[in-house]
Amino acid sequence: MNKELFLEIGTEEIPAGFLPKAMADMEAMIRKELEHARLSFGEIRTLATPRRLVLCVQGLPALQPDAETCALGPAKNIAFDSEGKPSKAAEGFARGQGVSVADLQLVSTDKGEYVAAVKKESGRPAPDLLAEILPRFIANIPFRKSMRWSDLDVRFARPIHWIVALFDGVVIPFSFGTVQSGNISRGHRFMANQPFPVRDCAHYLEECERHFVIPDPAQRKDTIRREIHRVAKAAGGHLLPDEGLLDEVTYLVEYPSVVKGGFSTVFLDVPKEVLITSMRSHQRYFSIVDDNGRLMPGFITINNTLTEDPSVVVKGNERVLRARLSDARFFFEEDKKISLEARVESLKQVVYQQKLGTSFEKMERFRALAEGLAESLNPAVRAKASRAAFLCKADLVTGMVGEFPEVQGIMGREYALLQGEDPEVAVAIAEHYRPTQAGGDLPTSDIGAFVSMADKVDTICGCFGVGLIPTGSADPYALRRCALGVINIVQTPWMRQWRPAATTWWMRRHGSAHWRRSRGATTSSRWPWPSSASATSSRKGWRQPSTRSCFRTVPNKSCMRHSWRCRQMSRPPSRAASMLPHWQRSPPCGVPWTSSSTGSWSWPRMNG
Image 1 (tube, rainbow, N blue to C red):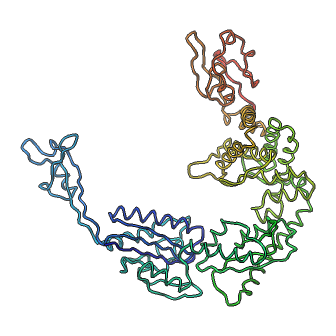
Image 2: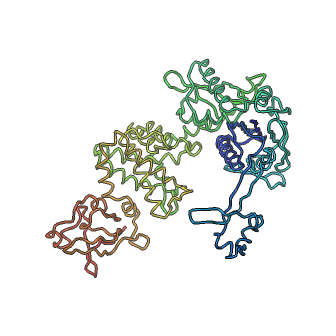
Image 3: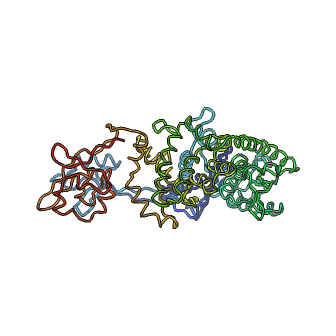
């Protein structure tokens, strides 16, 4: 007969970002536990609010099925002597399996006959198994951060206050810390903070609705989406789409209610990105825009309670937001007093990375790269690319970015436009951070793409050059994201026309060598370059050298400096060409060969 397992873990408020992953982990974990316990099951459902995690499993049997196990032991000729008496090996195997020697059986396999211990295990009642499984299941739910409370040894995302554990309506007895499982749940903390009994999952959902709790996050999300669109339309505008914020507030409330507030129009002089960021990041407010996409002086917030007088809630939210927007307006007015060009000097006081110098030095490095890209791919925008690279980091030392780091680049664009910079340069300043995430927006102009790629390539080469290489579990400098960003930019349709030239230019310049030269580095053991090689020629063919060497005579061999040319060669040079002096047969990139003391050809050590 199919039975139902119902589990509710009642806690203090769990952070919203923990809950979606916890729901997925709970489903995967209980599936694994039930399969290991040989309990068949049907649908698994997980629910979550800030104060509770819920698990419901349908189709469980009342009794675990019987099982028969067969453990192979030693071969027959080892387990028994010539007289058929059991040997020490057979006795030890039987003792280890917990059976007598007389119970051992012979089993035929592809390798011959072996001794085996066949054990039959009778099925146990499902409630007894679940009483052992559920405490372990609760303890192993993974969170980014767990905590301990009181003097207990158990850990969880937040302290646990109650546990409901039922199998076919009957309590599964166990304890977690000092909390004993039962059949009593609780309603909304403020609107119905009362205990209520639970019979099964369906009864639980009905009782939760009566006690102002919506356990299903999908239902809460649909309710919030419907209400905020209704309120925005009633205000004469449209909701600014923000799916990430909608997902977040869904897990911040148990019983959502929508409230609309407003702010003074004087704050609309501040760039709308700042206003949206302030409302979204700090207050979790939704923004309202008009038919033309302009920001309106209003916001929508989601409460966790129903209030008798919504105006009191509105005034409180407006007071908090007014202080935030006043700070933003102050920083905006103060930042306008100093030009971006004047702020560039302040980057000399900002350490980018201890081994890689200041932000000013980094800017100089990728500015040269951006100029080189523009010169090779689109010379008409070289000056603008250089100007954009020069100014793109200046907003990092403004008060606005210091208060709202999320608007870096955006404020650089706004300040550049206010100070009369070329609009293309201003747009490139904002776009050079793109893409900021997987599937994010890419630069829309050549200038923005050149500066973005140069910045990211400098970061990659610099970090690898000083040994800051990402591992399988850690990438603190987001080098993978930088590399993927460069790849995504190059793969855009409008960049395809530049791709062959970009590849040739970059391999010619070779980023890591360019970075070392711009840093003024000298030859040392820190920068190992191949100093000699052992390739020789003969009448029968060419002998392949080490892959760390570079030879014009060896095609398709990787190297540290000239692989861009080696890979393009389809065959070794003619015998006449190979007999020329080495200074007359240098690679097309112009870096000459040198002759070592052994007479073999190699590349010289590079100064920087």
